[in-house]
Length: 169
Image (tube, rainbow, N blue to C red; front, side, top):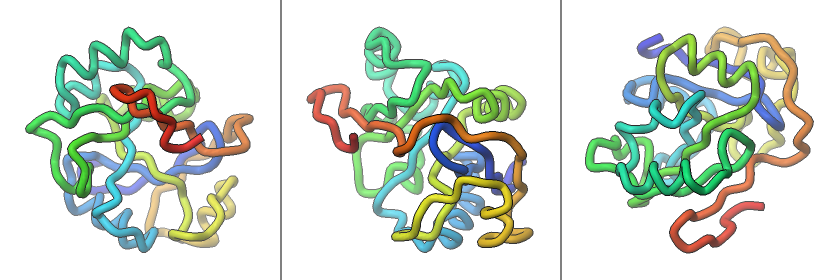
């Protein structure tokens, strides 16, 4: 798992994910997507405790108390000093979500950690909604986890928990 890139079903599409502490794997995802590092990435987890290393304690407590999780809402939280810059890009926050999607949550549970989660597509193109589509675009460069995507038609809503501003609806 250390440097492996996975493709797996999420709430609205297939996602690409990896160990967030593997700079090599994160770079591979950014290369596959043709996405700049400066944008930052989303982390998903099966439980809030998997996010402890990446966000401040206060931010995580506020997120848990907010009632958004588990579910399809990604929150922008203050990044901890231990959060790698290759995850947060040019930001002082990091986008995180405790997913309720069964396959994505089981993958985090099985790996015992939060993981990077970004839509499986090249930047500017439509997100892939099937394992077959992922194989067609990325081939053997990713390990594809079979399963069904959720019912959501759009990517997760992103909310800045401090300002309550909806960054993506």
